[in-house]
Length: 154
Ligand code: CUA
Image (tube, rainbow, N blue to C red):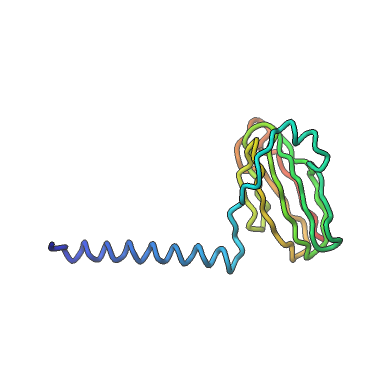
């Protein structure tokens, strides 16, 4: 079978690009710590509202390890203000009790879709002190733009 030279070049270019993208995914994951949020479990929204751990920050090891059980609902996050010390590793468990929302922490690699009935999990270590705003990234109705909160790292 005869393949035209130009066609061969295009095939080579396509394979090279695929290989380059695969390498870049590895670099993003291992060098920059980008993670795909994992699906922790399925929950019923009414159980989330009745479980006292939801909507709160839990301190596992003072100054080092924290968990945040974040509830998303139109149009607010609960808790809305999270305070943690610098260098703390925080695992976010995020769910919605109504419609689809998004959870993105500005200035970090944290970004996920938030669906009712599912808990998304992502961890991050806050090395630099400051105020990190988090926002809803899925349009969820009239006051979508007012759906935000902040993480204060001291
Ligand atoms: Cu919640 Cu947009």
